[in-house]
Length: 137
Image (cartoon, rainbow, N blue to C red; front, side, top):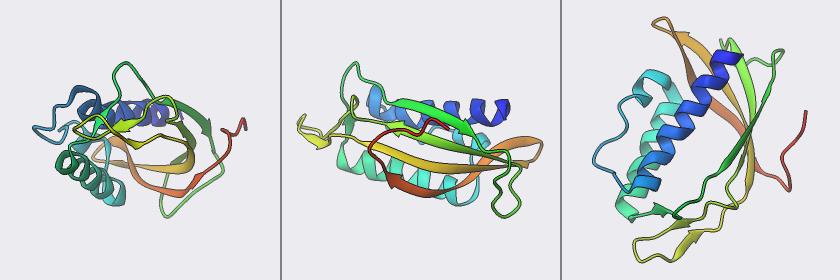
């Protein structure tokens, strides 16, 4: 589960980089090594949407990510699952003029992992929903 959490946190860091830096020159290549399947497709689509819309992260803000391992939960041929809670209330998304596009919220989803070419990768996430607070177990 430690490797799954490491992969997840790196993915979130890389996916946030264009919003924070404003550098949408290319989709972060390292994500191709950490993602596959539905998740990779969705990640690329989100990148393109943000790029075309001119979205940016609010300066000096960061989303909070909490993770709960789910060792008995499987989807398709997954080998690991993590319940992820993403709190973006302190990290609003802005448009190119600085207006707030999204004030943020709290969302949970379950991320599923499996090995591909010797590396653990996220291949899908399920049960994405907005919640009033992050679960603790």
